[in-house]
Image (cartoon, rainbow, N blue to C red):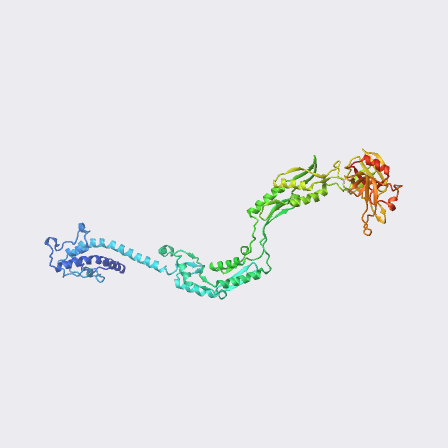
Length: 588
């Protein structure tokens, strides 16, 4: 009986098993065909089978000890006559599901059926794996061109759509393209035709499918997928820039420019501070165009212009250099200066005054304006501290109270030196006491009152009388003639507190009047012996030997040219009592 024959009863298989059998037999046939071909070649050459190798009638084809031998070897050893049986591929073909056998052949079926079944199960498993691999690879190939189920692309459902479908839809959507630009006074809508826009649908679809993972499709096919891909839009950048720029220019027509942060002095806090910048409303043309371009690239259809697109101030309040400069300036303002005369505090120079001279240069360095400080010291400070020419109210030795203004006697500060000392201390950031230096001094510090003491000359213009007080007592007195109406002109004697100056002299002193514009000669020429000037060298107490009487109302009709005329004897006596520096008080 041939080893490739089956039982007389047909073997029944269902369709699934048949298919698996066919796949397995085909694989086995590919191996056994090589052995069959070798066997046929040996037969044609006359090689006989050794008797000891041939099987006996009725003996089993194989036993448990020979399960490892190849199918091709079994077929050769069990075949009595190569011409009596079909080739192995014919036996295991798809049409051999129920092959009839003779009764005598059925005796060998039980012996070969068990090893055959054991060989079939690994074959089935291998076939299933091959089928699974094929299905998997088919899915990989498919999902390289088709989007997975439950997939959205930029919010649109593209489940199971092909690359071509998505590319076509993307390209066709250009007809509805538009970008709305608003904010900061701009209201502009751009359509596809306005900027000659077109979509590259193919590139868009390929970029999107590239985000899938086809090799993992068995794991991802049941999930959801949200893809985001920038739309590949081509447009005329020049046309876009022109249209956006024109809209910006229109909005900027009445726009307010930004203001840089600046350094300013705060009167309330008495400190310098950085005043924050002001953004303004003017749109930055380049920034607005960039915002629209970026939106189109990102596939957005609405652009809201805001503060980011406004023209920015160049200097911000957070600028480190500005804040450091403010700190340096405030350190200078804290250098308070106290002006003193001995133990007396005359004035305090604080931040309110210092801020007028502490300056921040363009390079943010701190400087001190010495000229401005000197001007202040010689002006405002001098008016506060100087007593020369100020109103004085005092009592005469006889108890009568007098008020008088004007004159050249009193205290007068040296503004230039004081300013230099202030500048030196402030630059060093040092608080200090400054001893005031003077251009002129008085007998005592008594602003608004008697600063000359009890020794002085009093000229009472109302009474036309002169008294010289020595230590509070009258040492000399006499009538006088002061300035008044003379030659048709009024020549008043000025009131105030003066002192006899260095032009004091005695002897033959010649006095000359003003030059007459007609005669080109002095209005008068007089000679005196005792000259005691108290206003420059023009107004003085002096003897007047040309007068026979003094006092009364003489000055009203025959007054002097401004001097105080004294009887010659009294003038000589007074000249011997006074000296340069003796105070002269002239009052009405």
